[in-house]
Length: 393
Image (cartoon, rainbow, N blue to C red):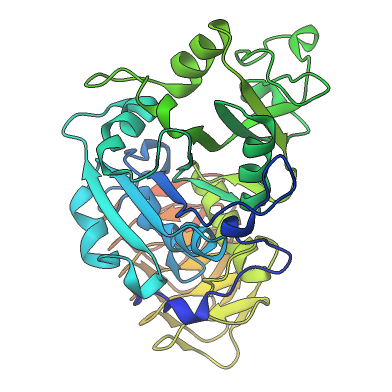
């Protein structure tokens, strides 16, 4: 993997206000408070397999660095100083890569769940590592969301409203795949609704976007030592008990990276500059080729394609909107679109891939044609011309 991006290369994003300068309800600048966050990175990422067979979801490279690097860099740019990572699946991968976080200008700590505890259980499980006073804000982020959220604005909303918990909400064109979060005219959450089954049940286009501000004392109210879902248990129960849950709608870039198609799209959007991150290791554009990769002069890379270190792209290959991980080989004349090519894998000459995931170390022989969500498992081997969706003429 690439080395972490040094802290000095991670400036505050244009237009962002450092959290340490956020104003309180009186409009005055409060005393400097060390802001901290919890990052939930313990999921198994089963929807992303085979990408997550050997690598936890937050560590899959997106635009040249592990996806988690983008989240940490944006948090640091917003003024967050201390982050606790709630780990579980393949937990041993995180600390050797990021260490104490000093290279990113952060102080990182790691807490590992022996058994999966869900979102709420994971938050409660790391509470002993927090330093905030009972009334201070603590940010919580899901580890699989790529977003342009204005983090300081969410904290400022929390402070102004006096909420127990504040939620980032985003508007989506089709909310049927999500739980709905309606709010009153002042932004106060009025309900948490399950995924709508009929048109009549779609009462809002606002959904939970996976970023929260908890008042520190509220975290200690989550039951300890058992699985808890904040979405299904904590938030609805607090609302029913009269707690103040505030919503802030921020409809800038937002993408749940839970599926291979979404992950590939997110990486391409980072390269293209559509998704904001100070951690992209190069200029925005149609392509990002990392040092140590070899690309033939007549190969064409477009659509936010990223080619990682040690990868080789052969003559005449055409790659659009795709990610080629470290040490992979794409041979002469291959055509790849909206796909992810795993580390140390091979795509044979003239093979066509569209919307495909190739697992680490797999070999796809020449003259194959894989389309429409095909997934080739890690280490698998497909012989030359073995799979096609069209005739061989």
